[in-house]
Image (cartoon, rainbow, N blue to C red; front, side, top):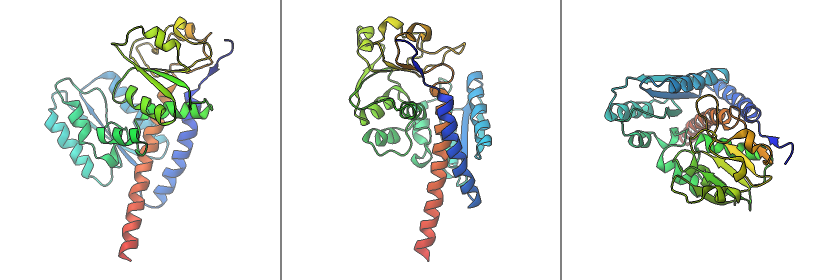
Length: 290
């Protein structure tokens, strides 16, 4: 293949941010300030960077952010109590627990504590179940971003064979469900998959979400396949060997500049969605009392 289409996540994110900013401004005029609360436990440098990026994005696009930084020795019970406090705070519309948390914390228990209406990062099992059934409000942000990239560039999904490499609960599994809901035939591969290159070679769409640098090789790729690299490893390296896959791909995302920027865009979009639902609920109450 020659001249593959480069799927520019920055371009997609810019369009989403513009619409989110306009909606946030309308909410502010009605007395609602969309607010995202980020909870960070410990001192992981990468996590600190991600939280700062999200706070800056909130400021840039008309949202406000509340940053909660808890010490490394925080217990599961203390983290759960803080999340419950944010659940009760009417000023907070979305809650993000930055992953990963220290190993002594029950991360799944903490995720499940987040109120469904404030689960803007799509991490609860309840939210995942609703998204899988096709009516969830907030799909996990990276999977939502991947679907937005495919739609922005008008990549056909229905009837295509998609191979997802990775089965994490906030990326591999939910993106598989989103693709399935759009009538793709989906194969999910993982660390126990036998003859992985063979499965990848059958794919019209490849989603790499395995967390290993340059893992997906060029000779695995079907000519003309669409490659979405959802990995981000040290040194700005994705899960796909970009240079090796480029000649065979029909379309491919770069790293950085692929799903990453769109992930943040969806986090803000979902927070504004939640704020709008808060406003609508207040308006309904007023109408009922009138």
